[in-house]
Amino acid sequence: MKKIVFIRHGQSLYNLENRFTGWLDVDLTDEGYNGAREAGAILKKHGFTFDVAYTSVLKRAIRTCWILLHEMDLVWIPVQKSWELNERHYGGLQGLNKDEVISCFGEEQVNEWRRSASVRPPGLSKEAHEGILREPKYAGLGAEEIPFAESLLDTEKRAVAYWKEEIVPDLLQNKRVIISAHGNTLRALVKYLDLVPDKEVTSLNIPNSMPLVYELDDQLKPIRHYYLCDEGEATEDHIPRHIDLNDPENCEWIG
Image (cartoon, rainbow, N blue to C red):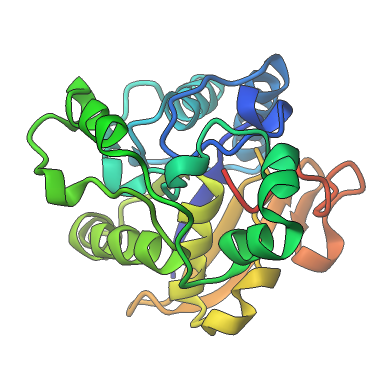
């Protein structure tokens, strides 16, 4: 049996301000830092260790990874960073307050952008897209590789491709892996592993800063999964009371 741990980054500044974040590179709040420390302490308490870590190129996921590994005394292990583990790209909505967007476009339209598996939000302007291409973290990528906006299925496509190309080989070599990423990236990987139908993905939520453990067989098919809290294992139906899956700060549709 193989195990892999998923961790969604701690609360970010835009989570706190109720803004669409996507690929905007905002930092963690103090609560986000503390959540990462707590996650590392919980993993260490329950005997977890890792050989390699994966994360995105966005600082909220990177810092969560660093802090967690520091708590576990594992800062020496390799940390692989890739844009393919970035949050879903929210196009022209990025940086905007969600309540203001609802006031402008209507709740029905915004819910479709947020919850549908296949619908993309309005895209970036050409100028904003060119700005991303000039960022050093995306050097070497072609203009066609940088999205103007993404649906969840778009996010799933790139995240699953990275999973197959980079993470699967490590798991097959029995390496112990942790992925520090984003709400929609992790939703996409869970959707893939558990064969969740597109129409059911709206009920799939990943709380901030709470380790999600997957046990896999030798063919990397899921055997079971559970969240890990201070007391031990917790299924989706038994999340500790301090974690509210309906609280947008803990479990929002947009990372």
